[in-house]
Amino acid sequence: TMTSKPGVVFVLGAPGSGKGTQCEKIVDKFGFVHLSAGDLLREERNTPGSQYGALIEGHITAGTIVPVEITCSLLEKAMLKSGADKFLIDGFPRNQNNLDGWNSAMGDKVKLLFVLFFECPQEVCTSRCLQRGAAGSGRSDDNPESLAKRFVTYINATMPIVEHYRALDLVRTVTADRPPDEVFVDVCKAFSE
Ligand code: UP5
Ligand code: MG
Image (cartoon, rainbow, N blue to C red; front, side):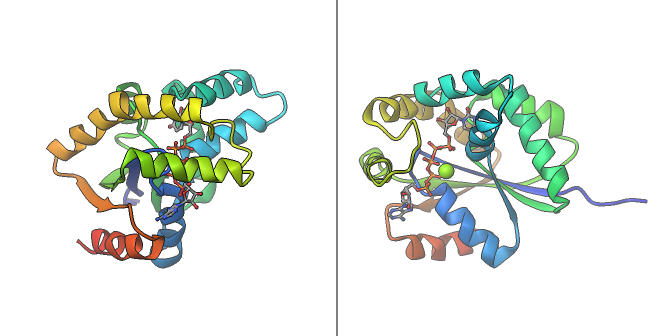
């Protein structure tokens, strides 16, 4: 029988722009399932015996991007396991390799609804991540060296993906340099467009 494809919202924005924080609120209000590509990669890295652990950790501390075959298969597995029909995919696709790999593996299996994009100055984002690190996040990339590298990747590799979707008129932008509840008011508007 005909079943409709699951809907996907990509959530993009700089490191520390608040993607994860806002996704939790979206889950509560709109019933999406939240899949953070970074969380899935950290979980895979932490799985005993994973053949990708060292590779993933190398990319995370260097602020570079894991090959799409790994990330995309973690995302697809999590989507199937959840059985849900609408997903927030947080922090992906981050570069052209991610975009191409996703389109060829998943392009026909899901419907991209839109891209939620958080705009936030680098110094605000950096100070949030450093604070989180100082508070004991345990994230191996919440330090000044990794953060500088994460931003280089964001500007050079991820912004072109945002621009690609902007040209397709699929981007809904939210200003994220405000308290979380204020940001969420505009997130809600983006979901009602
Ligand atoms: N905070 C949040 N909102 C706030 C607000 N409005 N006002 C004040 N403080 C706010 O928030 C970050 C911190 O800021 C928190 O302490 C929060 O309380 C506070 P968070 O919601 O976590 O922001 P987020 O944008 O999710 O930041 P995150 O650090 O997770 O972003 P990244 O994109 O850098 O991290 P991610 O986990 O997505 O990726 C990490 C690494 O994994 C990448 O660098 C890469 O190496 C690898 N990766 C891939 O290779 N491929 C992928 O597809 C994905 C990741
Ligand atoms: Mg996050």
